[in-house]
Image (cartoon, rainbow, N blue to C red; front, side):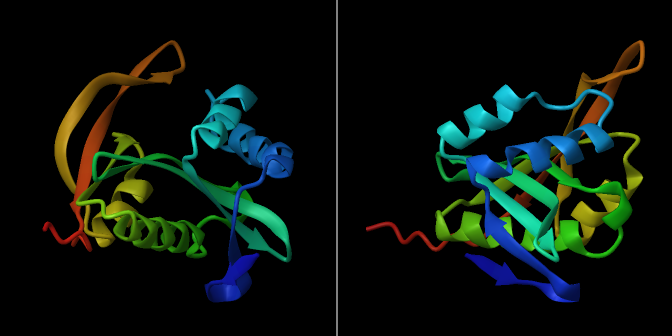
Length: 160
């Protein structure tokens, strides 16, 4: 079952039959992509895996883990030909709402220091830099730093 979002796109939960399409986007976007096994492990672990669709074709995805009232965006990716159309923003709004429903108090993510477009997106969504991870990402023959970003969430949890 999918949920309509803006600009003719819809969202749906990942299913194992979606793996080939997700891997195709992953390999288009990243020099060092996740393996099939990593996506399969995320699914097995019960991580939130949301897909954006355009004309019933997978156009992007987001993987989020939740534990101890915290959410962590592990991977957010949109097919290159469909970037800058609001898909990543819609995916992020969806997983932020899901984190609320899971009573998470904050959300974390890492972003390449060179990925200015993603940093702008996360800033618009209320994320703030809380740290830096040195040499976090592989890059060519070296490594690249990551910014650690966080967003405080209003928890639905009411202590007794």
